Image 1 (cartoon, rainbow, N blue to C red):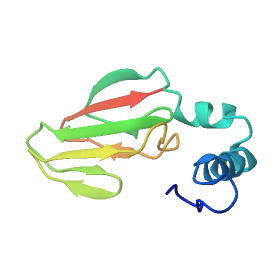
Image 2: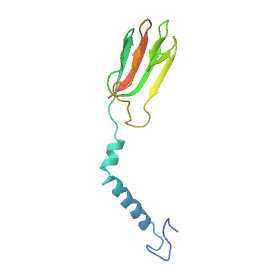
Image 3: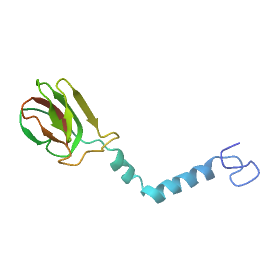
Image 4: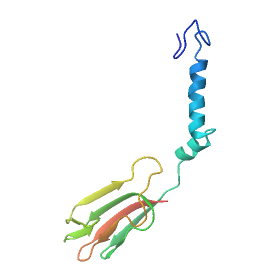
Length: 120
C-alpha cells in the first residue's frame, strides 16, 4: 500500500496522488524551486586575520569570528573582559547566515588580540 492512498480509491495503490500533493505544496511555498536553489546556494567567503593592540570593530558582515588574547593583560571584546590566554569563537550557524556589520567591537589597549574572521 502506498502512503496516502488505498488500493480501492484514487490511484489504486500508486504513490502519485500523495507525491503530487507534496509537489503542489512545495510549489505553493517556493515557486518552481528557484527560491530553494537561492537559499541553498553557497557563497564565496574570504578569510582575514587582524593582529591589534588598539580598539575597533571587526569590519563587514561576518560568518565566523575567533579572537585570542595573546597579550599579557585583559582586554575587552563585545563589552566583556577577555583574559590573557582566552580564546572565543563565534559562528553564525547554518548556511549563508551572517552577523551584521559592526557586531564585534573590541578594545585591546594594553594587550594584543589575534582576530580571525570570515566575511563575504
